[in-house]
Image (cartoon, rainbow, N blue to C red):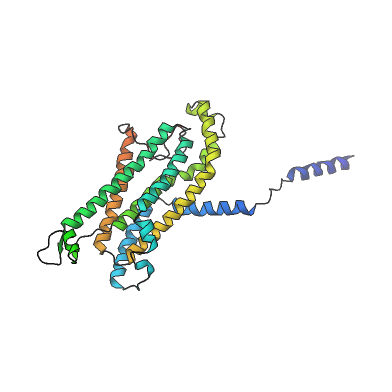
Amino acid sequence: MASTKGSTKKSADKTQEKKPVPPPTHIGDFIVVFVMTVCKKILLVDTSVKIGLYFAGVVIGSVLADMIQLPRTYLSNKDNVFNQYFVKLGWGWTLLVLTAFITQTSYVYCLGKTSSVKIHLLRLCMGTFWWYTMVSIINYIENVVGVCSGKGIIGKDACIKNGKSWLGFEISGHVFLLIHNLLSISEEVKIFKDWKRLGEMFEDPDLPKNKDIKMSDFLQGRKNYRVLTPYINITVVVAAVFMVLWEFMLIISTIYRFHTTSQKVTAVFMAVACWFGSYRLILGYSKTGSLKLLQKPGESPMKFTKVG
């Protein structure tokens, strides 16, 4: 009898030790996880680290380009397809991707409040202001600080019209634009590192009470999360593709002698100044409540990510 009880106990123990076997991973799921992991590695590097890398890359690349004559290739031609249809329209492409990302994500974490979505989109207006202002300053400096190779000809337009060369301090608009694009993407998509946490928060039935959120708003946010997350993932992939493209074109603009080292470094400082003015000064100052028209990326009643 004791033997029977002992065998029954062992059998029960073995039954408890058995764990359910997880279903086999589908190849499609594996590809999705792999792609999203790579995109996060590309996008979620700290912005301050990126600034250091871009600055060092531009300085070192420019110095090497002055010392070593690189062979001419298709990419060294300013009329190449990447330059004509992507870099020159760079802020437009970046604006398109970030508009899609901010609209979708803020509609989720702002619990479907379109008025809050519009406030988050205002950050792109700030970026557009810096883009237009700095490009205008670059053109102004080139026109004012320069002379024509032809005697007696005044003004850049007249100089070029007469077939002469305008010798001015031409700050690299490409370097400025590319780094401005890169830093804007880096700052806006950083909330995606906490996107999974936001989904877990939407599964907590006690969260509306703890965060003083209306249940109807909470349920709307949870619905938006489930519906929009696949589209947000696609937008993240597109953002990662553009970040790689902008970084590649930054290398091309640096190593080929389109501009001098000082002109490229000046462009880097201008782009970093725009980033610092927007995301560290203006948005940093808004936390005091003095600038209620602007909100930091991820700022919402859900408080799912570190803001600032």
